[in-house]
Amino acid sequence: MISPSPPPEDPSAYLDDPRREPLELDPEGRRGPLLFRLITRLMEHVIATILVALIVSVSANVLGRALLNRSLPWADELARMLFIWLIFVGAAAAFARYEHIAVDFLVRRLKPRAAYSLYLLQHLIIATLMSIMVWGGYLVMSRSTGRTAILGVPWNLINLSLVLCSLFIVAVALWRSWLCLRLILQLGQPHRRAGG
Image (cartoon, rainbow, N blue to C red; front, side, top):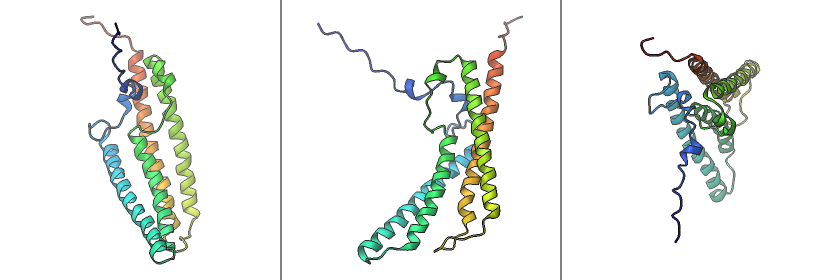
């Protein structure tokens, strides 16, 4: 007699960390500060717009080469600028939605208070590194007066993507750090007994 195979495991057990849920920003589920949710939704629309413009720009260049037998230099330059914006806006939106790749093997095995302490350290490091990027981006923007070679777009318009997206990541990381601190303090308090 063949024994029945065990039921398949739920994949969410490997994908979702229940301890991370209070730290997540969910624009659809109305979890997290309203401003962060609105900015995240706006960034997602900007990403879609940039993707369409990027496809049009690259396709125009391909068609120019195939049909006209010549490259369209403006299309290359536009595609590069759009790609830079896509990278930074995409990184900020993914951070807001907690969608960056992470190795959470250790944090899943820790007790809740220790896990939130590790999350707190993680977000403080992220906020510090992104603050350095904001400062560096500001320095570059304050010293840059150039324009792109073909379209004449100011370089600061391209550099602005780094500064704005890094600022957003800093704000979200500090908000998550504050939540972690609150959760650590709540878990550290002894539970009050009813009637006592």
